[in-house]
Amino acid sequence: MKQWIVALELTALLQLPAAATELKPDVINATTFTGKLSSEDRINPLAVKVQVLLDRARFSPGEIDGRFGDRVGDKINVVSLSADKQSSKVSRIEVDKGRETVRTLARDGTLVAFYPASVGSEEKPTPSGTLKVVSIQPNPTYRYDPKYKFKGVGSTKPFTINAGPNNPVGTMWIGLSENGYGIHGTAELSRVSKSESHGCVR
Image 1: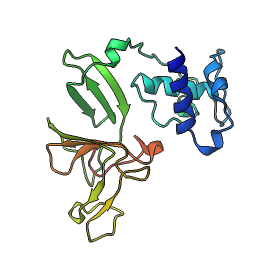
Image 2: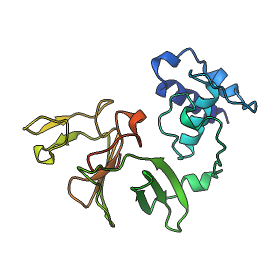
Image 3: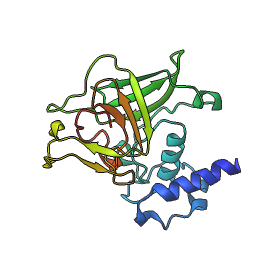
Image 4: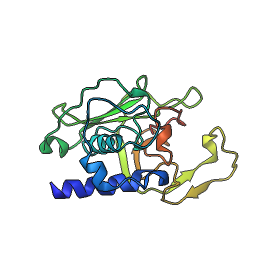
């Protein structure tokens, strides 16, 4: 239990904006649901705790920002995962382009993880059908090819962006069998499922 609390404290401190640093880890860990959610637009220790615990259970709440956002007052069902389910190996990844979600499943069909996603655009739609994972690269170097002709990118020459917090594909690249397409992270978590991608699944 102590290890879990320490992990929760570290995650909360590392992922919150600078303005939220006045929240102490012991306040976040001790907070409980009183039956009513705060309607104030400020960092809420209960929101931090809920978001971190959901993220730890691999049911991503999106950006961990300490705010309840547009779902305030809504009732939700949260799946209780046992430790063995959390360690299940992923056999299949399903991307729902209409709902902008990604689900990972074990060989027996058990849901392992669930994430919101940005999925393609009219200009650069995400491919449909069954694709294979051909590579998995943590902390990738981003490589831009002018042939992609991404909207808003004016460079006519290839360029790279080293691994780090400003990398456009975040901290993970999962390459797919369709050349140039992948499932990846982002440097702008707040825009996931709220903006379009250049065809990849963000």
